[in-house]
Amino acid sequence: MTVLSGRDAYRDELTRLAETDPAIVCLEADLGGKGHPFQTAHPDRFFNIGIAEGAMVDMATGLAAAGYKPFVSTFAPFAALRAAESLKLTLGYLGAGVTVVAPYAGVSGAWFGTTHHCLEDLAVLRSIPGVTIAAPYGEAEMRAVIRTAVESGRPHYIRTGRNAGYESLPWDGDALPLVNWDHPGEPGEPCLVSVGEEGTRLALAARTVRPQTAHAHLAHLDHAHLAPAAAELAQRHTHFVVVEEHRAEGGVAEALALLLPQCRVTGVNAGHDWPVQGGDHHEVMGQLGLDLPAVLSALNLPAALTA
Image 1 (tube, rainbow, N blue to C red):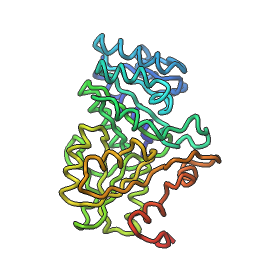
Image 2 (spheres, helix red, strand yellow; image 1 turned 90 degrees about the vertical axis):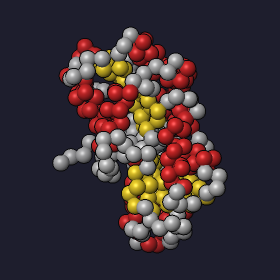
Image 3 (cartoon, rainbow, N blue to C red; image 1 turned 180 degrees about the horizontal axis):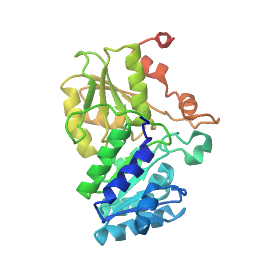
Image 4 (tube, one colour; image 1 turned 135 degrees about the vertical axis):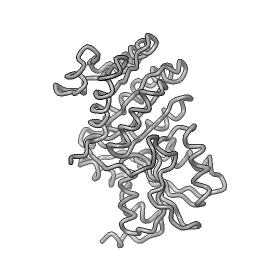
């Protein structure tokens, strides 16, 4: 069975939900192409706005005020940065029930170059009060996050990659847990905390090297979710290694360090450099020092173990 990428799982789940919920509308910034499933199934509720991201968010605000449930999607750098003022006013100040789904986060659009990279979106969105922020890992998590966004009517920012498809970690119940414990590990040892698709991929790869390593996965990254998640983490461990495809500033490691002053928090992230060469997604991550050897080093494990 093929596992859908995050952005394809979003499109498919929203199309399914719209079959029984006529309030759902879908707006895209010229990303859908000719085969967008929502456009095919619900053409009267699909709007291709083109490269006018701020206007798209503003239109969604009006639709939300009229009782609709608008979902808007564009590349993460254009959603979080180009349309930042509209997001601040719409999702924050007005608290409008608009969901922004942002693919191509991090450096997943590797060959497109720096203009299409987005290593700053969590810093921007986490600074806006009232926004639920999620970075699902795998198809099942993405579908769960979309269902919650539809049901809650709250403003959401949902971060995903480009084409990579991953199987989500299992969890109990319908709602995603604050902390999904892939492996609890032993008290006193470092605990991996994975964020998003690539952070979780690297954490799982580190566990193949050292299976007894503790690993906690976080899907929701806003303050309202992180604060209780931090309290749960601190009940089991005192040293955390946070792996995230984001800059150090404004990321989850920095947030957890503030929430857990009594603990040691180490970040494995994209650092402070700009990629200077093209390549596939993982090659560009490697240029930034975000790879398996970096995770193992933060755990004080030799990179030679990967050989």
